[in-house]
Length: 127
Image (cartoon, one colour):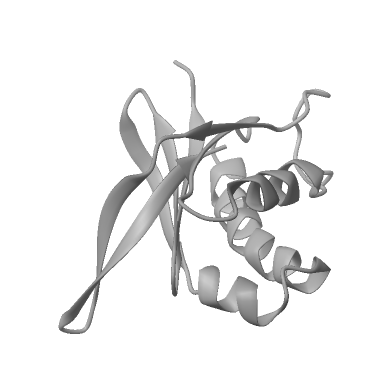
């Protein structure tokens, strides 16, 4: 059992899943994507808005389990920036037994999300 957090960033939203034994246990669609990150100039404010969705998901995970320290990220754009933002964020409110957060960059996978009658492709990356 190697739980991990899977993060898929799209243009207008980010899909965050907590996965255990290939089963999605917690899923959250955060309304921040590439367009928001770019609009904020890829600065600390953009990173904070992006990380808020990850922390929100981890709050639910922490109610039942220790949070994963392995994140998997697939991102067609800004993968290094997103990965660094995730690794540099503070997770002090969660018990990690001193283990740092590690981010693994993986291949881009198209994950469709449906918004009203329109489909928006979201790219998944694991950290």
